[in-house]
Length: 304
Ligand SMILES: [Zn+2]
Image 1 (tube, rainbow, N blue to C red):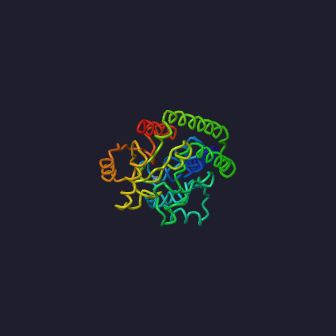
Image 2: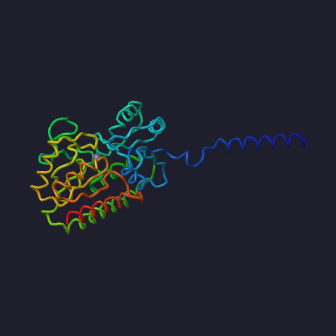
């Protein structure tokens, strides 16, 4: 009788242990959200907190226009409970992977569906031609406007609550308030610049949403495209130099993917200073708020 009791007790313990061993760890039981690039990823992390696992595909500092996913990145995308992409062709090197995941039924949230999309206007230094990169093309650089980013948060929060069952209502409210405050802060920073100084020449056309929000004129771009990947011709550079002279531009900004040699040559020939601007990567603290704040300060100091 006693022996039978011991065997039963051991069996119960064995079953209990094996159940514990099979129990998924707390982190792997969380929902998995993949965000394509770091700047949007930073905002999503603030919204989600520790309620889900947020994976960013494109490592911070690499060019989102050209980065291509590895087999491991592709697996994470296909296993995700939600994939958050920018859209409008930003993730040039991920297009095939994202399209395949969509057709496999992976749930997607496209940030650019929630903003008022800006299209390239005339006089911005972008020629007509390739319909995806030329005059009239849709601008993917939506993170350059905190008000647009707030619209993205307002669109994403209900999706997280309804489809992923994550209670993010309080974080959404707080994040939206902070994005309003960020917009005010950037407005105050650039307020010290006279209207006539608010002229932007950048590496490629990445500052359109910023220009639209804060009253800057887009005078020209070193790479005449919405993407850093396009080519520069001698004729394009001649047109750009003329535009810099005509508009009395105070500084030109280089960014990720801009040839330093080309930027330096333009600076030397026009006598205008060349300033590095971080437009596609997060600062050391990983915060979108620091990113926008730094961006506004660098631009304002350069154009004074
Ligand atoms: Zn860009």
